Length: 139
Image (cartoon, rainbow, N blue to C red):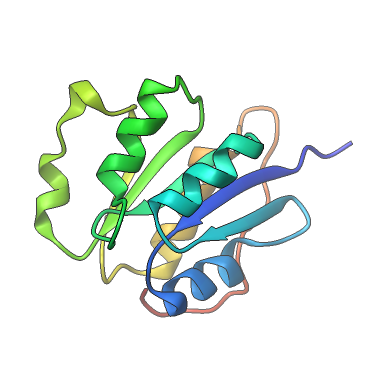
């Protein structure tokens, strides 16, 4: 039986959320969307996810505060960060959970899919799925 992975995508831009949902969602991967950190916390309180993909700069509770909340609450989701600012390379590691991948917007969809597959799927025992729709471009 195939284990379904769950990913929470957090971004204040509806177009980015829709695009990432479209390229990630499939039979082995369920995607949930949140528009900011507060909405993400509400969803995280209700269920576990395999990964959280979050934008850094958002109104209200931003991605850094969300990651701090995840660490304080001993969440085990794999953290993936994306940002349009080069500042995200300087995230304060001690107060954040381990960050599995970082993306600077705009990024290539193919690269995002490849890295997300590596983050989510154990290739030793499971060759993994080929996430996405084959759509090329940038987010």
